[in-house]
Image (cartoon, rainbow, N blue to C red; front, side, top):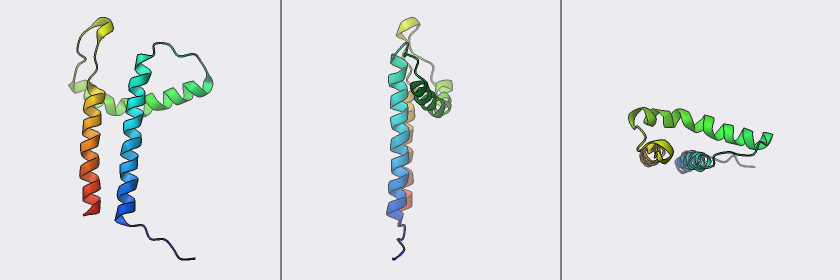
Length: 100
């Protein structure tokens, strides 16, 4: 059995996959915010808590800079959109740096 070497392309693909998963978690956080009340199920609560606890620290950085637009029931939070743009740019820069 020959050992398999890890190439730069493999590392770049792994890093790209991590960025895609985190962007997916942010999108799931957006969808969760539209549902006012979820039925209580222990496994569902665990999944929802994981999503919010893993994305809110990153989103709070942008929430300090960008205040929500509107007020009352029609408040629009732009921080997830800016966070996704920043993650996409960081992904492109990091993956291209790994491949060079």
